[in-house]
Image (cartoon, rainbow, N blue to C red):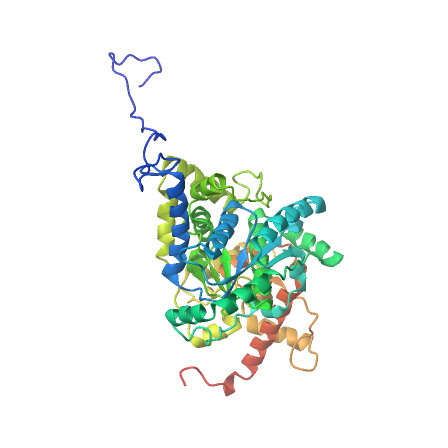
Length: 502
């Protein structure tokens, strides 16, 4: 056996050390300037070349996909972090007069103040809002500062995907560019008048603050809290975009963040929605598209750009700030990828390139317009409508069997079989709480079993971690009740309906 002080006849195990790159080298692009930054081992850039490389990457991502048309209103979702603030800096750079290829869309800014869900005091929240307000004011763009508490005043229509109007997209991209050039002066006047309308939404009723605290206190795990916070923030951004005629929303998610999101979503059961959650374009809402122009940048590139060119940003602590690695699935995945990236620098890029190969099957026209075929929370296509010989039904069966107690196994088995059929459960509720119109009363709070039939597998796990679904916002329970009534009505008149094949 090997021993600590064993003699190997003068032989020593010498491990080869990887040479650490130094800054005493030339720029890989201009071959003249001294390197100021080394992104990877072979990529050393001087200061001017790195700025040109960073700007070109942003323009190339927008130019390659061509989903943003001239004169289109785009809402920039800024959280105060380095990634979203560098995205804002790129938009400002692209809209400047001396830009070689000027961006042609009309930007706006939105910040969701989620301090109420993260346990921050009112003074801390106001301090962060004031810092971000000073940054937004200097841009000249219209901005919206919306507290998360306003999510309790949203209408239920925010959960219904809207078919986009084909008129703005009927001409080709080249035709839209030519039309923009002809109306360039008018567009500049509209842009200046829009920049003068700064709007701040920072008021909410006191009961909304208590409702938000009650909602997040009912969630048992940090994993469920982070997932619920992401969902509510997305709903609020979507509502502001629709109310102010924004057809696109820009997210500042970097390559490193998307790599963490991809693996954590797989662990949370969102494999069917990976293409929408991590792709460049997310068309799940129909009339408002989500784009991610920063998805080609690593966190190292973004941090270096913000430091070298003094891009202002604000650190705002979130739910997972100063938490251990095993506090949540998202936090554990982030720690795993970060530690692996330190030893193997191609980890993040490999995961990111894998996400580029994912595509979602295009739904039929009936499934696209039918809200019942979408998840109630994330608005993705339901992944629970599968055959019985599937892993999903095997998981449900295992869950039902594990909940059956020995002393009353027959009673629990009967109850599980009764609640398995959502339509039969809705019919039973209608018979006991009928209001005379064939449906239940509008003030009925849906139970866990009622919501399960309207959710995808991952959102079911989030609702499962809740102590009570009564703490959900009213627009979610109202939409759930509307879909339940619609399903009951469709079942009653099913023999008079024509199938799609007919």
